[in-house]
Image 1 (cartoon, rainbow, N blue to C red):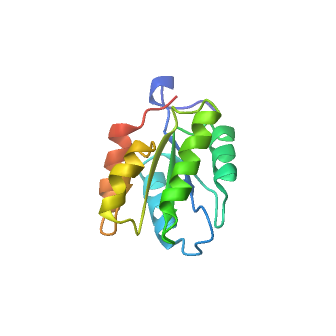
Image 2: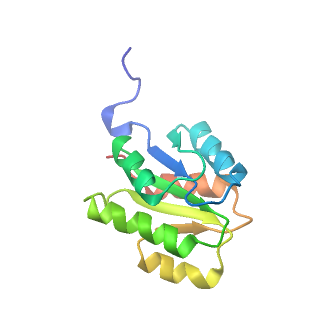
Length: 139
């Protein structure tokens, strides 16, 4: 079966991941579904993923972006590790964004570490989808 989309309009590929020991994934699943409903190809990695597993999945899936969800308070460590591992694997073109319970004061440091966008509680799925469309390009 041939694609109805020209190559330049192939859908974005997004890996949505839950790093660390946080077991609450409802938000990640809601975001994954919203991105999928918006026409993107989405791979949800499931709970309790290590940064290494997430980066490997992103590279294997030829992802354009990785969306991380952290509610455990370990966002500084986990987001930073994913961004660093992508850089080590020569995959800095994969955009890292995320959300969860993240204090506003931590967002500038996350930006410095390579996280393109952080969505805090109250962000709508429409806002997330629109940001991804405006800031992520297909490889």
